[in-house]
Image (cartoon, rainbow, N blue to C red; front, side):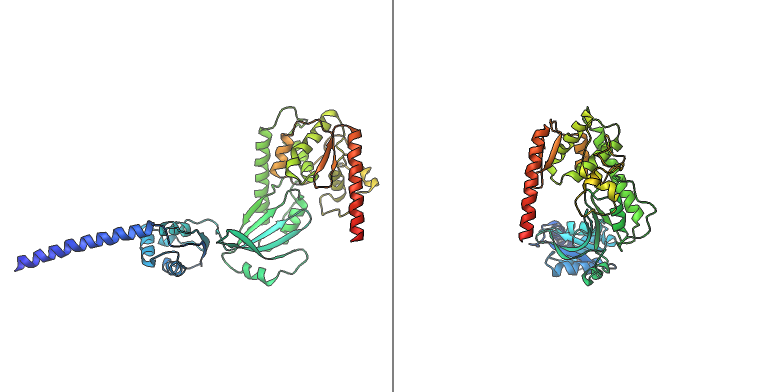
Length: 388
């Protein structure tokens, strides 16, 4: 009898082991298999959340098939205690194993609400936007000018949320004074700026920031980025340039940046200035005159007067020889590269053509015809504006 009982026990044990092994294999397959999600979602993980709470949330949203398997998988891979707070984009069909990796590996949030502080040439703005996980496109919720407007409630609400992300976006062609002035108005940053960085030394780009970061630290990041861009471009410069140093390249790049907003023209514009420098001709470019008036502290907001074109300032390239003593703005990578690798052209003149671009010329006679055409376009535009 005891032998019979022992035999049955062994049989049950063997069956149990096989059943357990089957359950484990099933769980492993479930954990690694493609998930049921058919549209991307934005998963919010609050501070202090547990893996159990997250697993229930995922199951409720249809992102996983079994919350228990999700928790066991996270425990088995020793990631349960590595849960990070934030908002995370979960693409369609993501396996449980990859979801666990997404919410435990750290790094910035990949979806949810984002505040972008845009520092532009003419003004600064604050934009609150939210990523639509289905389209992977940001939808703007509210925007305002921090220099003129009271922050709206939509902004103050997202500022209070722990998973809101922040970026400072610096446009090409802004001056260092404009950057410091705009940063001083951003409540997400702290600390004073002892000195405005040298003109041209800040790299236009988009910078992720966190609440409490100092303004000085952000400016240091911008400076380091510009140094790296300039060093790389200088190392790859073409031969025969009338530029004695990276600093002179930065000056020329800033002029190119202010002269054209058409990306395809940068190297053509650069060729004009390089040709003029090589021939000993004055650069005669209006943005340098404007900088001599404003010193980069704001926008002139009107046309130049003849007396200003003849005015004696260190930056007025109508009266000085060669390059001005400093950059006149912070140029982007493309303008720096254009300054050090211009197109090979015979052009020494250019003027606006009414389309946003420029008409280039080799001879003064041809240039005068282009100028006359531009004056005609200007007159038509002015007449149309008055009639409207």
